[in-house]
Image (cartoon, rainbow, N blue to C red):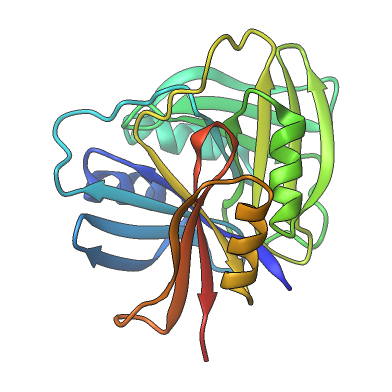
Length: 258
């Protein structure tokens, strides 16, 4: 059974505004979809990196509820200053200006996008030759968890690998992924976390697989709730299911059928 992370999905108040913001940074809108409950778009760098799905729920009104589940989205870039200035010009709120970090060979900056989601811009010194040469690309998507070991165990059960662990001043962090393909997910257990995670307007993340039924049943057998049994969709040649991850995160299992 092979698995890899697909896009991660956040709800926004205004889809067109969000697409315009992220494409202004140098990302590309590679698809748009309308489903019964939402308008959706994917932004990414087609040359590599992660995928980000933006969704405007049709019953959405006013601002989104950020909750406490989502922490930040990483946008990797060859020029952190240029990307930072471009975001500010598009209306992003400055959290911190670009600075060189002493612990790692990187320069970083933080902004909040037009819905208030935290975005970290990262330039590594130097980037390896394997990264996209053209413009920014999406790095990992970071969610807060209450028990990082339980969350790692869940995503390893999904067929992903824990490829790094980091301790920073305020959190324990780990990255789970398929090192050979797909997106990256960062898990963060905040040291000051108290009580349960509140999802707010977060929607879902995708795990692509060649065996939707097998992955669904493995998750349920290990104690995860089944939100939707595997079903073949009529609109697209896919089989999909939903399971719950620790802390109540919604995970869509997606098998592309031949």
